[in-house]
Amino acid sequence: MSFKKKEDWSQLPLMPCFFLPSARYPAIKSLMGSDPNLKWIVTGMVFTQLLACYLVRNLAWKWVFFWAYSFGGCINHSITLAIHDISHNVAFGNKQARWNRWFAVFANLPVGLPYSASFKKYHIDHHRYLGGDALDVDIPTDFEGWFFCTPFRKLIWIAIQPFAYSLRPLYVNPKAITEMEIFNALVQFSIDLAIYYLWGWRPIVYLIAGTILGMGLHPISGHFIAEHYMFLKGYETYSYYGPLNWITFNVGYHMEHHDFPSIPGSRLPMVSIDISSFLCFKLCTLLIKLLQSPYYVM
Image (tube, rainbow, N blue to C red; front, side, top):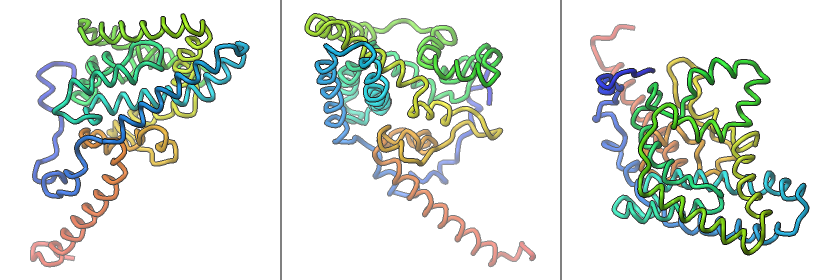
């Protein structure tokens, strides 16, 4: 799917509202709203990483990088996905949008670099213009598709995924810096400076290396490829239902997330169950109509 011009945006395929489960299936609508546990889980992860900063302060550099990859990378990658959830206002609800933004800045602290405000700014476009050229910055550029075309180059591309993911928006769809991004950067670098003053360079390297390594050649990073790279023509979103969802806020339930972005990650597995029963009901209804209709001949 490709939308080159602004007037093409109206051509986005929409499901008729009478078919939407949220309209005719209240159980789906009941899943929408805030997740009261999310803020406590994220707070625990942030303080876990701050404790890790203290513990790695005197380690040899090889062990700093070892723990950055094996432990910090898992935590920080999970935190970036928590920030993804928070960007949909599910930490405090839609009526407390400002609280969600501030909490995302707090969640950002172990990442080491300011991220949450910029992510929020571009993630809205990702949902609105899914797969649209020059609009959806989650999609690789033409250059990336042309250059990283061999198995070895693709391996390199996966390794540098954090850089491609963060720099691509500046090339594809640059936007003005917002006040929230400035606030995000000031808070982040202030905490980084405080950590450096207390414990030196090793904790800073641990945090930033954990983010870069955890979002590159790392088992958890498979969702970057699984979510939106087209393996079946015409399908731009895919879901993964394996155990990595347990530590990634169910980001694998990606088709469900794009259909119902107001549902917190913790409840997305229930969407799959509810939709299955909904579609089963629809199928049975259609079969009954088919058997009763005089217009269909076997």
